[in-house]
Image 1 (cartoon, rainbow over the protein chains, first blue to last red):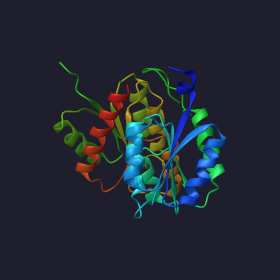
Image 2: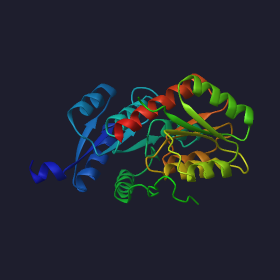
Image 3: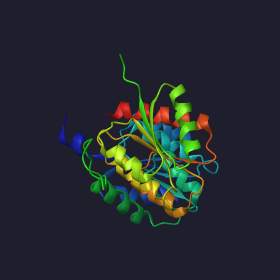
Length: 141
Length: 129
């Protein structure tokens, strides 16, 4: 396998609005990622079968309100190590619960600056898990 | 012979803990219960290996169930962690998301949903590990 194949990271961006897709694409590409764009659910699912994703940014609303959540769940199931961010119109208990139950890493307000979202997602990807693993029997504070 | 999947259920209401224990034992799980965060932390520190931990949020103190979740998520192998609460708020839900809790169920809990979630999370966890 070539070094390029091993090191190139790929991001999935799913949003109904082309201008938002374009902004995220620019941001990911400027950080060395390959960006795969989808405007709807079928295209996103097709992309999932064709690529290996390290990061995904998904709108919680594609064709109708909330249909982005199960897509985020699918991305998490297929790529368990991928960082999944969901863009939501508001942060409330229901959106947070949807995020937890679909394995989403972080939620962002739809009005967030794409560069900021990408920087945050990639930052948390480099940081990794916040709690180190503990062997059974070790003391827990 | 395959080992029974093991489950820790933490709830300060004994009736809830016992009902969940009965439900999951019927599903073939080996279930331990604790009625407080302190009790749960002791069990987790004793070296028991759990496939999943289901914890209430408000017990001795508000949101103290997050301590149980945090301790469980630090174990290796990591159990699936489910938080059940009737008092979800933006603060405790944000904390649960940040900690990477696997599932959040709201009380009154739909038992079928909870059983499905635990079973799915355990299958996913086994696949990953």
